Amino acid sequence: MKIIGKLLLALALLALATGAMAGTLEKVQQSGELVLGVSEGVAGFSAPDSNGKWAGFDVDMGHAVAAAVLKNADAIKFVPLASKQKIVAVSSGQVDLSRGTTWTMKRDCKQGVDFTVVLFYDGQGLMVKKSLGVTKATELDGASVAVVSGTTSELNVADFARANNIKLETVVFESKKEAFNAYVAGRTDAFTTDVSQLASLRAGAANPGEHIILPETFSKEPLSPFVRHGDQQWKDLVTWVLFGLIEAEEKGITQANVLDMKAKSQDPAVQRLLGATGDVGSFVGLDNDWLVRAIQAVGNYGEMYDRSFGPKTALNIPRGHNNLWTKGGLIYAMPIR
Image 1: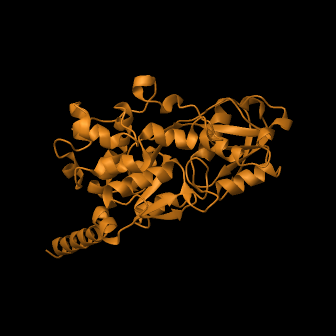
Image 2: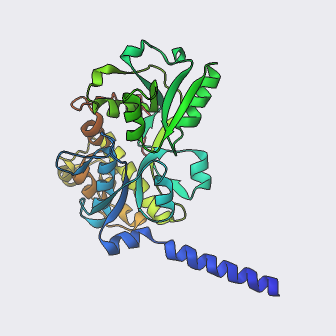
Image 3: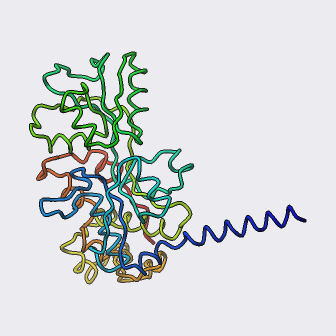
């Protein structure tokens, strides 16, 4: 009986602990702000602009969720996080939602977080200075490579070296900026991270033309925003706001025409999406204008992408895998019905 009593007590304490951490939606609504984990400054994804205002793809994602939940897209507290901090910050409840990171089995199953939707398909690559005279990664035998602590990069580059029978010496740094600056200063021969972030950091360098991104992409890096494990309602809400932005692009709904589409579209899917019929907002604990507000705040997925990575930006990253499935890409929304 004593054993059973102790077991019941342990279960009760566990339930209390879980309950204390439950209800991110209620927490956000009561506080009136969304606490969003962002990078320490990666152009295109999340970085302060010249006026100190946070901007980028991950920031827009946060604005969309804030608009849907709080009816105020700007009700966000931004928390810059180093790569090694972002998982713990979410699992501990320090932030409500984090910028996209690579969706891996270990993170999903063992580290206390749940992933939502892959918003950016990426892969790891290598950057070197043109003066090194290298045109492909397999020519880097014996080179030193700057990598960032707390990322998948170190393991990936070791796997790449082993698979290609070359030796690469990895030098680990605490942050991307520290690693990149060390590489620029000549402390390492190369720098490695996701190809999109290589492009971002190169664009912000003093002399971008001095650096080249080698052609090999040697990993899968599906980047997804993530939330604390165990809060299913919050995970569902974030997931379906993001799916909604993707489906808005599929249906031609934009920041400029969303209200007109709601009033005039005869497409049943558009009517459901924008709350003209049905009550899909109730599925995630919101009213029927939840997605209208999100689209008004940031536009559809394609508008977000173009604003951060499109041809008018310094990065100019072709959509490739990040195009809609109807255009040969991998971006696909689950049906909202």
